[in-house]
Image (cartoon, rainbow, N blue to C red; front, side, top):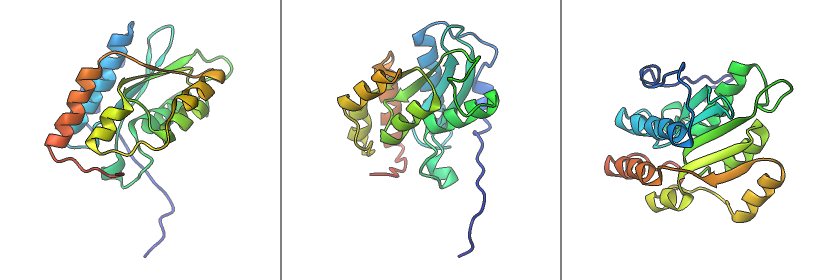
Length: 190
């Protein structure tokens, strides 16, 4: 087997037609609607798992980046929607942190409560708030393994300036998870 010395991924081509980069997303409902729509489109286009995420400037509502789950098509267990959004935000802002000098506060909206890996990445990313639609139990009911996530983890992160909270559109996000299951989507970590 030949060693692999580089990795590359990109968002599916449909993302460009579904995201309005010039829009201002003023409310939590608008921000979450984008994350959930990204998850739905990812399932409908069969370009990855049933998860979507978006990073916004907290005050202005300006969209900084989006992500969809690319685990199966990219053969990479780390390419959860949140991880893709963090990576693309850092590249766009040319910063390893979204909480750097001169940067506004950022927040992540994600279609499902982050797994253990994405929770850790939220701390390191520099976002100050994470809002999720579907809950971890909704993903576990589908068969996804979310790892060791507990209320203590949320308190730990809150003490370090990162608030995790349930947001709007849980039913809509759960419907996307169900759509994925009905379409016999790959459960890649259970």
